[in-house]
Image (spheres, one colour):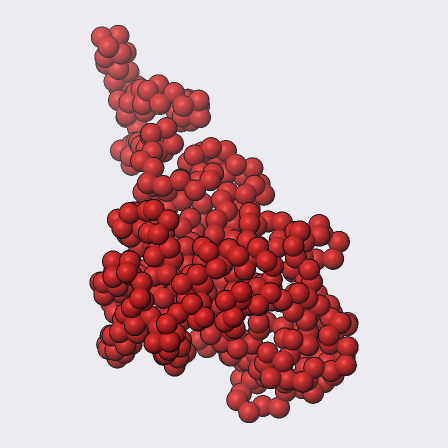
Length: 496
C-alpha cells in the first residue's frame, strides 16, 4: 500500500500515461479488475479530465456489476438454459443465459400454462383442441365454415405442418385423421395421445361440455359469447387458467404454489387500470363483473375453484394476460398443397377469403388497413385462387397463451432469439399438446439477456415506425438499436 501511495505521489505533476487506456482495457478484458482500478486511479492522479475519468469509471462499474450478476446472480427461476433475475436497466425482471450459447441452440421449451384458440380463428378453422393443429381434410375444413366441398376435396388431407422432405410425423399421427372427444363433446383431436392428454391434464379435462353440469356448460357458452361481443378473448382465457389451476391443486401443489406459478410471479396490474381511457375502463369494469359471475357458475361444482375465484386475483390475471401473453400463430397446413388447391375454383376461393377477413383485421395495426379493402368490395376470384395455388390462401391459426419463460423476455428491436410453436405430432414437441420453444439468433455470452421482438415486423424499420408499434405495449422502447438511432437523429450537422 505504501509503495502505491509513493508511486502516486511521484506521478503528481506529470501527464497521464499515454498508454493508460490500452492498459485499462487490457486488464478489463483479462478480468483483472483490481489492476484496472489502479490504472484508472493513476490516470486520475496524473491529471486526466474528470469527464474522461467518470466515463472509464462507469465502464469498470458495469463490468464489476456484470461479474457479480454472472457469478453470483439472484436467480428467481430457471427455465432450461435460462435464468430469471432482475435487470440492471430498470426494466424489472428478464431472462438471461448464465453460460455461453452458440447460434441456433434451443434455449428453452415448455407448454403454456394456459392457452386457447381465438374465437374468430375458431370460426374459420377446425383444430386439435390440445395442440391447435388444423386437422381433417380440405372437405372437412370447408364444411366447418359452411361451404360445400368440390369433388376431390376429400383426398386433400391435412398433415402435421412439416414441409415435404422433412422427417415424418410422430407415431400415432395420420394425415387427415380426426379423433372426436371420448366424452362425446364437439372438440376434436389430431392423435389419440393428444386426446388422452387433454382429458387428463389440459383445461379440457374440466371444461369438456360432456363432463360439465348443464348449468356450468351454459355459463361457459355465455362467457364465450361475452368474450366475442366485447372483443376481449382474455375473459374466456380466465376459465382455462382457473381450470389449469384446479388441476395443479389436484396434482398435489399447494394453493400458494399454484397462485405463484400462474399469477404472482408475473408482471401484473388490475385490468381496469390498463385501459386507454375512462370509457374503456368503465367498459372493462362491466365486462369483468359479468365474467366473474359466469366463472362462479362454470366452476360451481369444483370444490377447489373457490381458491381461485377471488376478483382481485382474476383482475390481476387479466392484467398479466394483457402485459405478457404471447399471440399464438400457427401456419395452416393446407397451404402446403399449393397447386392441388386449384380444384377450389374462383368462387369458392373468393368465399374463403371473405370468411377469413376478420383474421386479417385482427393481425393489422390501426391505420394499416388498405383503403382498397373497404367493406363491401367484391373479391377478385382469380386472385383468390392464385393465392390458394401459391400457398397463401389459408390464414394462420390464431390464439393466445401464457407461457412462463416467455413472460420474462423483454423486447428489443435487435432481438437475439426467436420463439416458435410446435404441435404434439411434430418432432420439436416433447409430447402431446402445444409447445413453445426459444432459439438463439446469434451467439450469447454469459450474462446476456435474452431479447425478442414483440412485433417481428419492426426489425429493420425506421425509429419512428418502431416507436409507434411499441405504444400498444405501454412503453417507449429504449433498446440499443433505438437509443443509437435517437442519438444519430439528435446530432446536428457541423457548420460549413
